[in-house]
Structure formats: structure tokens, C-alpha cells
Length: 71
Image 1 (tube, rainbow, N blue to C red):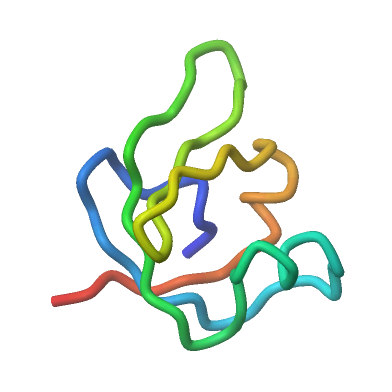
Image 2: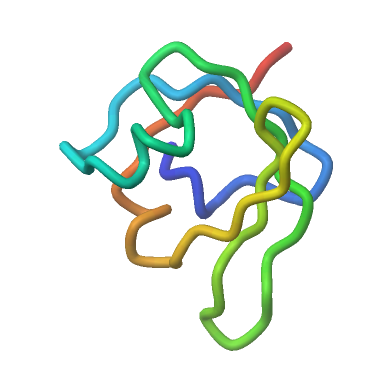
């Protein structure tokens, strides 16, 4: 599922993502677990929690990241 489709407070594991140096620099890589903190309205960014940091990700970028829900 695209990362942008997850709801607030859900945790997921990144399965596939585009080649993006900025994402890798902030720690988003295949296999990492992250949590959705919020989704901004009107097509705004999502805010994730990764390694005790909050990071905003553009909607278009978040739609290119594939993840699965942590059960």
C-alpha cells in the first residue's frame, strides 16, 4: 500500500521506495518501521515518526513509497 494511505497512529514497514537521496539521508530505507503521526488536509504532507524524530513527507513522495502494516 502507498504510505500516504495509512491512517494516523498506524505503524508500517517500508517495502519499496524510489531512489531518493534525501529520503535515505533522513533514515527512510526499505525495511525500516515508522509510524504515521498525522496527515495534513487538502493534499498536504504526512508527518511520520522515525527514530524518535518527526519528519514531514510530501504527498507525492509518500504515494511512491510502498509499505505494509505492522500487525
